[in-house]
Length: 104
Image 1 (tube, helix red, strand yellow):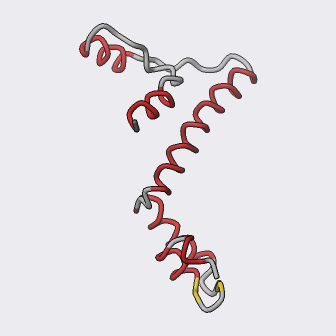
Image 2 (cartoon, rainbow, N blue to C red):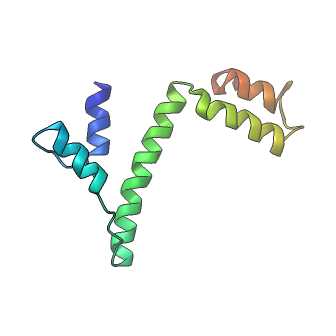
């Protein structure tokens, strides 16, 4: 199921074109040249697709509690809000336990 959802997100990227075999796919990937947007509208459309993909990837990583996101979040909280507290907990302890432990 995840692969189908991931393909649905990735197929909007310009580099992913269906090909007859793996060699063709690799060749297309290695020879692909990005096309610069020719107008503000095209730039907005390309940016919107990439932002949707990024948003979904971040949402998925947060749902998996990926260390790739939770570790920097903890570091940023400690750096930016070293004395921040929520009840009796510091920002560090909140980041370590996750958002579900912050209720109550």
